[in-house]
Picture 1 (cartoon, rainbow, N blue to C red):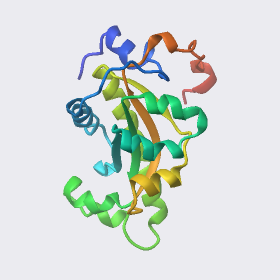
Picture 2: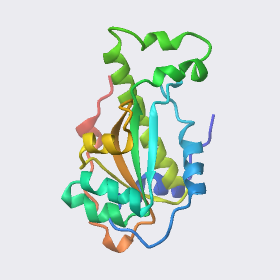
Picture 3: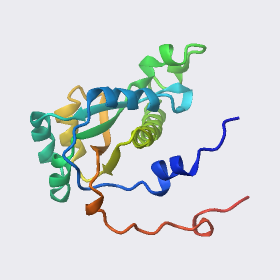
Length: 198
């Protein structure tokens, strides 16, 4: 059994970590993005289906393609971020199950007529899990995150996932946040407000 993480690690991942809207002028290298992926991909998904796909928007040209799809309130902060990850879900993730889950014919669980609903739900649920793992891995390696859903999914899909197979889920700016621009932390629900023990 793994030992509990020290309080400093929990602070970095959850307790003191914040959603950032302003960014320091400090680049994020491709090597760091690859390290984050290598950590995040190890998180569990059902049948190891791993449906998340990511486009890292870094260049001025790519940012110009993303900008029109953003809600007005999200444009400036997204354009200022060193990187914005577009998290998408592969609607045909099951085609890779012979590689990812080779000990049984898991592809047959999701592919074929009448199975579209379960495949779509599986891609969305597990892709969202993977995106959360990615953000935790980014925080663990010293980056700050600014996740958001205020954008036109259809426009993003046309621009960045033109084959129609991948559907955008949400986006997340990545970089080194400016602590001077943080808002006061919003409250969270207490255990008694959200949980019960059966």
